[in-house]
Image 1 (cartoon, one colour):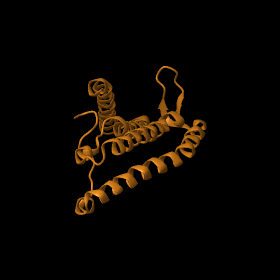
Image 2 (tube, one colour):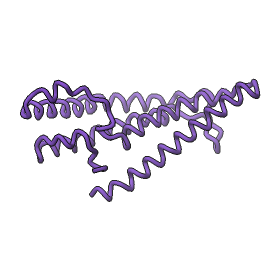
Image 3 (cartoon, helix red, strand yellow):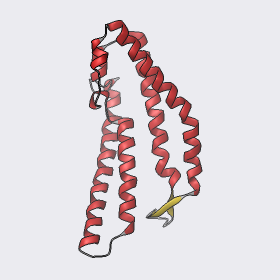
Image 4 (cartoon, helix red, strand yellow):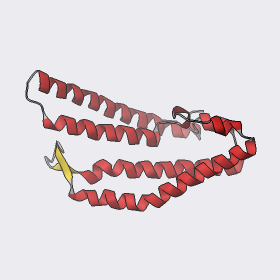
Amino acid sequence: MDKVLKLPLKFAQFLAAIMLAALFITFLLQIFSRYVLLTPFGWTLELCLILWLWIVFFGCSFIVRDRDHVTFDILYYAVPRKIRYFFSLISILGLILIMSWAFLPTIDYIDWMKMRKTTTVKIPILGSKIPLKYIFSIYGIFMVSLIVQYLYKLYKLFKNGLNEEDRFSSTINK
């Protein structure tokens, strides 16, 4: 199963690298237009913000592992194993429930954003401004990804019990 999941992971890393390269090039173009041409391009700032938004939520959805996050786990490791199981169960269920509860209102808001468009960034081929619905859709993808990941963690918690290794290793990158 891990080998099957490595190909999509590599593809996600490739897409994130492309977005990061585009952000860097856009940022350099912004500096060049502002300080060399003395006529700043307005679209570069907006494109940098859009790319940054996508890099953060896309990366958190498909690339970042649990062990990559900063954790404050002094209390977690100070209690007995049974209480740690309870802590894990409460945190997993809490995240699933809160994200599930917020999902439909979030999708509704993202859909509402279709009437608003970017200020300066246009679709290269069509020449029309991008509806903000498409820009903010990455947050909906992030929510679905988080819910699925934590449903899988809940399944593993019930099936295998508390496994301290799972807190620090990805299910894909073992």
